[in-house]
View 1: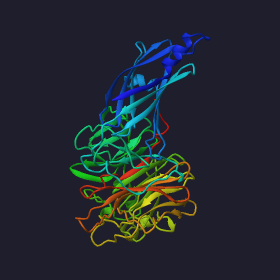
View 2 (view 1 turned 120 degrees about the vertical axis):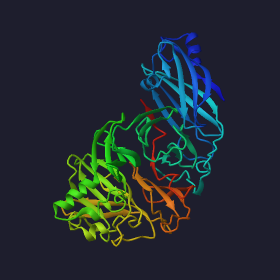
View 3 (view 1 turned 90 degrees about the vertical axis):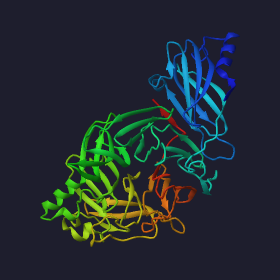
View 4 (view 1 turned 180 degrees about the vertical axis):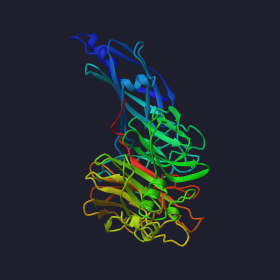
Length: 508
């Protein structure tokens, strides 16, 4: 249900009819609302309108007013004419317009301000109320967060919305009050969006051998990943040099290649470049006269890739191997540049060729790390889980275990071949999140930390655990802290979460 409160476009027409100068395009165009329909979930609605007159529409914006008692800024989205036409929402010759409004509060009356902008710079506004149905999560996760520390208005923060990469459904957008604000339609049931990235106006999700485009208006497109070796996507997706970096499981000559293949592919599923970590490390060890057979082990999760980042500053890749280290390699050749990890593990103890590539560490060595990124000042940011290797060969060193997990930052000096830990956040009292998890920095240096596996035990198969989302101010103060249950002893609620500018989004 929706209700029109005020149509300032109609008001402008009435005023012009009573006298005055030449009308601008907003004044010479009427907006008549014709329909309202439910979207694929309660967080999405479609408002039908008819534009009549001489104005040339440039964009439509909507702003969803904050609910009483909430702190997060209003959702504000601008839909450019190019987006509206391409998605079939606007027919310029007839003036028929459909406005997809998303980011609504479920089970609420939403105050929505619509702004119609025209090419001459004029605009008109209309205020409507959109009523939505309640949201009920069949998994009992996203409709019932437990707020441990509520955000307050006096706590400054550089973001208001987050994307949870879910193993249960599409990506989930929540605000810093703990309210779910967007879930899309699932292409299949069950469906996982663990391997996903937001690309400005849609989510790209790798699942099976398909790449899905999940649009915020609820639409879905899909293509196949065009490669005979690739079997499925796993872990993360991130922007590459020419396309997207996908982490892939494969099969070659009947042998499984487990979590050690990195692909760069375009959105049409065309593979542009591949990096086979097994081959890269085999070549490096053999070149030094060593035997790689007890390190590179096809059919076994010996590498466990969980994050890959392209660094345009020197045309390199940073790749996280949970079992071993962070590795930097040349984008074009795959040549190994350096390794950063726990020197008490098998890779360092038993392989002189790899030991020679290791950076000297000043601070805590990362152990079982996730979510690599480059900080605002060019340092290496990651989540340091603290879990020793789980798939090392029998009789070799698993490395150290820590009782707590922490996001950490390192300054890399390639001249002196050192890595200096410059920042580390230990949650008061300590939190252990041994698997999954992430940290990302905002332009103002605030951070979003996801402790995905609080309560996880690598030795107790019956253990259950929760996922906690924590916002940190630039001073390291906890701005909010809330948690979700994790069904089926896994990181399904959010193995990783990233900020999203849902309060200042432009779709083209």
